Amino acid sequence: MKNRHNLDQIIWQVVAAIPPGKVMTYGQVAKLCGYPGYARYVGSTLKKLPDDSTLPWHRVINAKGKISFPPESESYQKQKYLLQKEGVLMVGSRIKLMDYAWRE
DNA sequence: TACATGACTCACC
DNA sequence: AGGTGAGCCATGT
Image: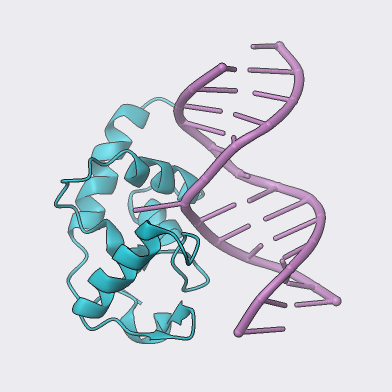
């Protein structure tokens, strides 16, 4: 592709625009950026973020309404904590997308 | 150039 | 609710 260099920036902007208490899926973010089908790319882009980043990466979850980390991992615990803190609760292992999805 | 690897999705079962 | 398999696409070796 030609503009992948700028895609990262677009993704950051979209993610940064997700309001607290709301979540968006990787696929949604990609689509909103104008690159449907780039869900995996969104994931790899968030992976590049430095630990001290202020980007609300935790508001991005997968289409199943689940956190894309092994439940026992530290990242999983951290993401769950940050979401709970904003009022995004989980039923079992998944988040109610119906209730918290941003922009439907 | 070919193959493996993901913070993914969708359709089924 | 949970598992599988095929499709997806940039990256890294």
